[in-house]
Image 1: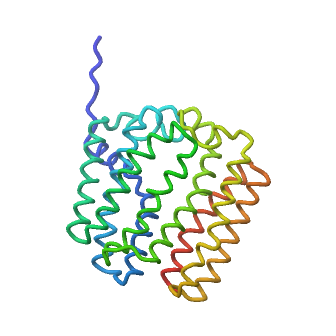
Image 2: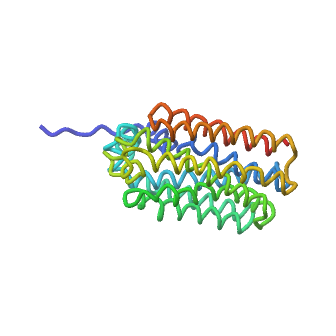
Image 3: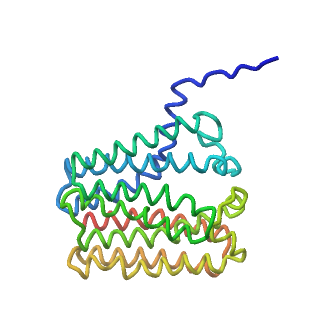
Length: 289
């Protein structure tokens, strides 16, 4: 007896397309973009255009990433319920959707902000989808490579206003870059068995005792301390920011050192949660003080 597959309702497919963009993950990226535009002197219409355009590009990059990794996602407990492994969307639908909104985002930035902002967004997309995504199954260095497209949005907000990149957005780039190292290595350690099952070459896959993973996390957190203070010493932020940045950086570093000392799932989770507190709090201080 032939079984006829029931069509998937358009509401389910629409919700799956939204899910492809990873809106929760994108929210922090958009906050970084807005802060860059605000510090450049425009927290209004240009900043909104920069956020909207970047959201489309980031969402499209996430969708295209899932198209390329759909077979690997199906092997992992934490990703097997995503739209492609569950069949709520076909790879063609997801690819067309991801490509369309990525292109729309670049064109939006080009039309309503500056050519440099659009170029940075396009570079972010290419680095993430074409370079970083394939490397995830080939080398443990993928986390460092992936930190580049992860940090590039820190430049887009400023570039959207001024059409250039100055000292402050460059500092934002390095803050986000080094923050990603302990953030993503903590995730990689917590889900190391899941990543191994999916075929991803995360650092814990070649570092079973976790020493290198914890050391690199600690180096990232340690580097953040002086880097986060550059806005103060450059006269771009006040003493309240400097005190807050130092306290936050010290807290983040202590969590990384605990992970280095214990190298357990529990200490990795503490470090991961600390990373979720650190970056939004630091950016808020930069925005306010």
